[in-house]
Image (cartoon, rainbow, N blue to C red):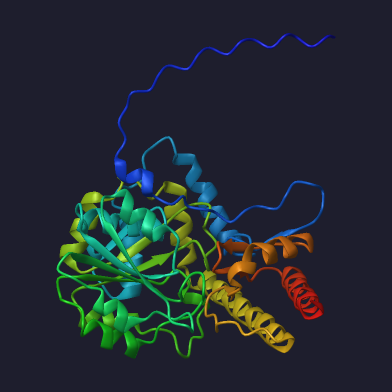
Length: 375
């Protein structure tokens, strides 16, 4: 049958709407790129996703909740907030849920930051920070990392002004993986005015060495301007369901509940998150996190043996500070079976995933160094 002639497309109407000028200056969020669809087997290790599928109890809870999705979820998410309150030793009213830790970060900006108010954060850090700040009329104050790719806390303290409303500390830091200590944050808080909120973003907490992990609970108890951000996307493997939360002191918790999107935590997400808190499920999730830590150690040791000098990551990823060679290295690795996340001219992040993916990453890194040595 001959091809039918294409139908002319109707002309688009002229748009005369006015968008906020601030949007023109916003960087675009760049998600981890999926593998090319060319028939070759590649591993996507560009998005810090869990390599483990949902545990049966978690999957079953989400599926069972689907039978009620013709109704709105519990807007208060009371059952989940009660469970999280008990886990963190706070009143359920101090737990504020939304669609992932990134959404909770956005709620913090909405609740605290007016036009021209400032938000201080390390850079490079989580890519969404400047987008969230700028989209709500705030002013980003990025403070460069140290030469060791750590938060420069003295410089961050010096960057605080009368217009500062919020400080964001990502630990372990995404994408570099370097973490902060309890003592360092305690000292930093002594330099921060009490009316400036300090958010400790712990999206990758469960992958930290348990022996040295941040004592966030103690910091929260001692300081009325500390808020803690957590997610179910990483260790719990619920990235596709989008759910995270803040642990806040009462006044800030109320403010967050005022600005968060109503019904943000969907019915399946609430059910799945609640299932991950069951003791038997938690035990298996802890085992998976321990495997990630062990696999990260294997990758780091292999790369060190090749001569790489990488930051000591405590996340479920490793970071190559390659500067101008970042894009070239990412393309080089993709040809060898692993899709990585390149950050402009700063570096490249590789998630810890299946052992086969790790082997391909190690092999690609060795080939890159061998090629560099032959130049």
